[in-house]
Each structure stands twice: as C-alpha cells, then as structure tokens.
Image (cartoon, rainbow, N blue to C red):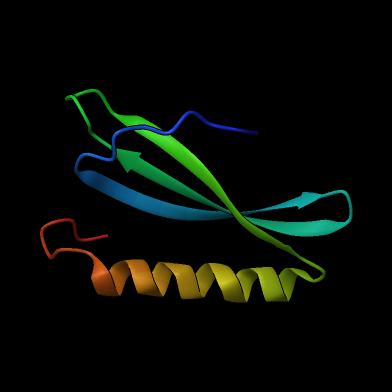
Length: 76
C-alpha cells in the first residue's frame, strides 16, 4: 500500500487505525491535508505488533502526540 507523497499543506486532521493483517496488528496513520484547496489523504504504516493491546497502545501514544503538538485552531 504505497502512497504518492503529497505536499503537506495545512493539516486538517490525523487519525490512527488498527487493522489485522496476516496474524499481526498493524497501526496506520491517516493524515488529511489541504495542499491546494483539494483535500488529500495520506496513509502511513507505523508498524505491526503481535498483540492488539500493543497496537492500541502505540496508536494512543501517536494520537496523544498529535493532540499535544497540534495548533489550537485545528482542535483534533
């Protein structure tokens, strides 16, 4: 699942997803940007883990960091 890099532009929101893939739990990060007034979504694979609990922990840490470092105007 390779995605073409996009010009980041202003980030609108980020979201983590956890999917089960070949016996492993994969954490994905979806980033929604508005580079040229046309929304673009970029998906990043953050890693795969042996248990769902570990994947959920990583996803929660990523979202905490996103909330902590986001400008107040975004509010995600």
